[in-house]
Every structure is written in C-alpha cells, then in structure tokens.
Length: 65
Image 1 (cartoon, rainbow, N blue to C red):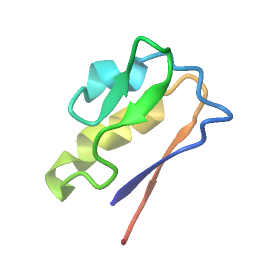
Image 2 (image 1 turned 90 degrees about the vertical axis):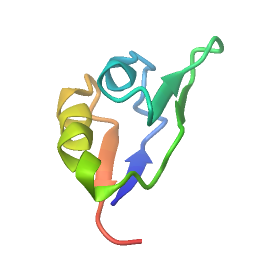
Image 3 (image 1 turned 90 degrees about the horizontal axis):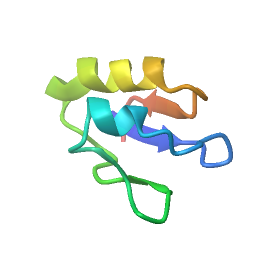
C-alpha cells in the first residue's frame, strides 16, 4: 500500500499525525510530511482510520507499488 496526499487539499490539521505519528508529521513550518509512503500491510487499519478522519479528505491509500 502507498500513502498519497493531495497537498492542495491538505490543511496540516495533524489529525493523521495523532493517529499515526510514525507515518505522518506536521513540522514547525506547518506542512505535512509523510515519513513512510509505503507502510507495512499490518498498519492498514490505522492508515484507513487516518484516511477516514482527515478533515479535508486529502489522504488516499493506493494498493500495489
């Protein structure tokens, strides 16, 4: 699975970072950074939660490479 962020939609609310801090980080510059674009399959439920709870629906999961 691959994390894809639409940075035009993202408002760096940090909801995803609260759910998965090992994957998402909002830094002092108020921009979201994806620390791991291809998290392990055992993290799928957490990633789906981050996608579902994003206020701007800026995060997507893509299957495959």
